[in-house]
Length: 173
Image (cartoon, rainbow, N blue to C red; front, side):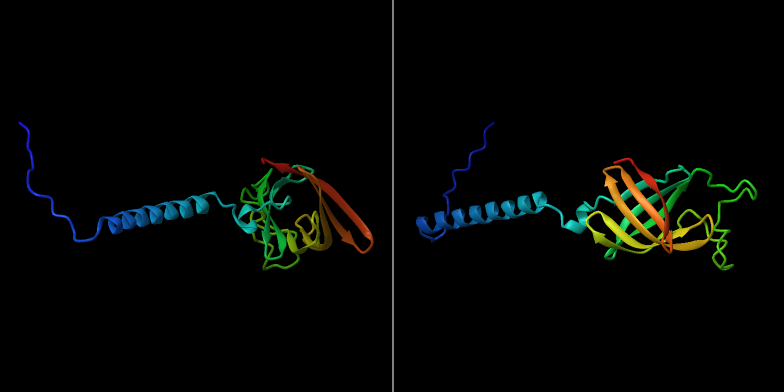
């Protein structure tokens, strides 16, 4: 059974040329809105969100005893211990702590989560300078960090004019 509606069509009293313009305007507004959405979705991220800084990432120390996540923080970089080859102290059976730190209030803080880089500021596109904390002796040292390739980071600590350093290797991307 077919239902037909033979009722008369009531048309608004708007002239046909104006109706066509309203439809075209609505159509153009829809297209403009879709274009804005497309541009927003395909636009590049701001530099801070892209994080194209080559030092940013996770690095393994030369001896492989620690893994450090380097991030940008403010106008410099931070380096936080995120993993240890031996996260449990064999003497205590508990997580490794900063027991070489001369400050008793800090000597019980966990090594994992410890920030090694302090006041590390960019000196060129691939180098930074500041201070580094050495958990092996609980001391801070003047430090330089330099990218030596896509997966090599030179980390130096200095006492006066005497410097020592090692190469860290990037983990993952």
